[in-house]
Length: 123
Image 1 (cartoon, one colour):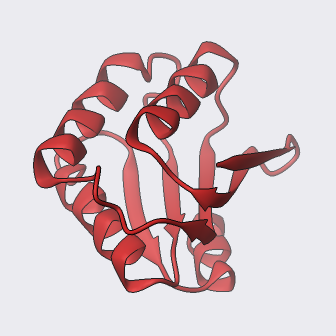
Image 2: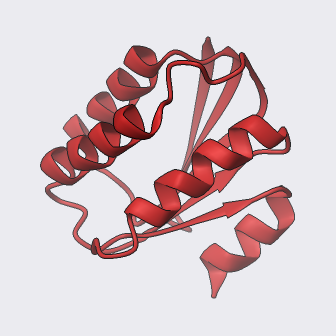
């Protein structure tokens, strides 16, 4: 997995572009490192070039990931996170994350197109 990070300080958006196979542990580590810094109000996880079939992202693992995010997100009590995935398997995993995050303080939404994600963040 290769990750490119871009921070737009003016718009308070951090974008992570993920290319290649995504493992559960790598994704978890990426989230942990993000929250150790100064998190922005808005985040985009761009998974349009991500690989793999998502075998590691079972319902149980996704639930663990959501609870992990809840435990490390201090300093970002509000905000929006856009998950952008055009492959069905990744879109499905992102939709599970979105579903588990409904009762949490940060809004999560899954998109197939970057333009829609950016528009949602700007609302």
